[in-house]
Length: 354
Image 1: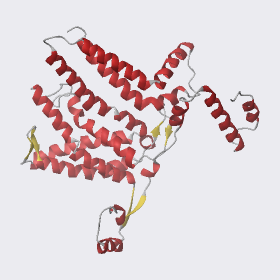
Image 2: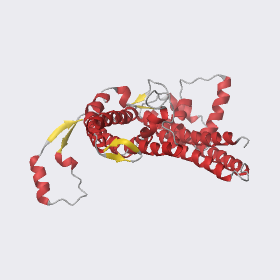
Image 3: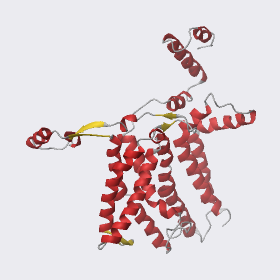
Image 4: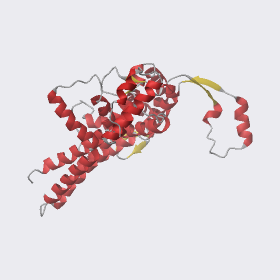
């Protein structure tokens, strides 16, 4: 089958272009529009092409997808249909369960390195703790896909992971380069936008009672009368939630990978790590964890904020006349607030605003 392997890599590359382009689009806009960025004439040509890619990212992705789809249909050969569709299905499965899920790691890193390091570390901690708990107390098989996994290891590892998440999350929150988000690829450009998650706060017992549930009045009165309070960083609570997921749901990523290996009749996906298989064998649980960390952060930690990258992304969608008008009005406002010198107004009046 000529160029059949090329088609599979082409489909995978288009998926990479879409996922990473979507997640890094705002970062790239800020990077290219930075005043510190002074490209050479050759680089200016490259940058002009990047602007087109950023502004028409979805359209370009769709065109690439259509080309791949037509190319795949035209390559079908009589007598090879089952094999070809099986290979296509394998490629789609890899894109869905590996590439799409791991691409969220990029977003987690730019939201703050802690939202990448902490979830990954908790999965590793759970793997280690479950191993030792299973070795010491394991008796009851957990799942047929992994005969060595036991209920004792599953529960013991989860309990220890939750307990260890408390000092781990508290320790990581002490470093600014861990907690602050990044607006560019430069290591010194940090924006500490969500510091309330890392500052100690006073919590009461009633803060953890879901008000949506029907709870008898006398129970609520009793809880209120106790008035138990304590001071803690919110990241510790977030770490506990991440640890519960890392120990209860993330292992099923490993079980899924075990099922794939059973179907392919192999022990490990690779042998780059002696005794532990390959890199894919170590990342099976991380794929599930990365998506959860992204969803959790965007729903319970991140709050709406108009960042420079977000505004620039919208401004680029406007026509040139509207962009000049916006620039002029913003200049008037900043000059009126004494943020810009007064002589700027005279220069702004020279601009042809329609």
